[in-house]
Image (cartoon, rainbow, N blue to C red; front, side):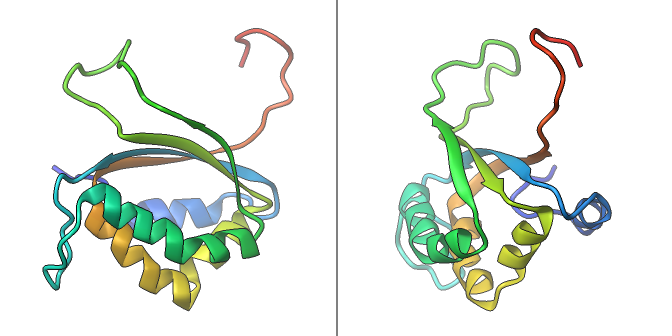
Length: 139
């Protein structure tokens, strides 16, 4: 079973096939490791390793036009597996999918992402787009 830390090649290729010139929002669900899993054995908690990721990647995120538009503190899984929990949930907005791709391929980002990989025990990253539907729950 995958812990969904990095995108699989097939998923990343599918991402690149979608329109790249429109704004996207990325829903992030994160569960941290109790102890970060650095290859060099560096001592840190998962939350501390994720904080290092944020510290090193924030300038790149902002440079491509990224913005956190919502963040929340998970309290209870009302619908879903009782044993599944998330430590952090947020929505990041990018001016275009190309901006996201520019960020994840940036050489500085590729160095910073080692902290995210060490920090995360499980995650979901879901690409979304705005809809222009009316009020209510219509699709």
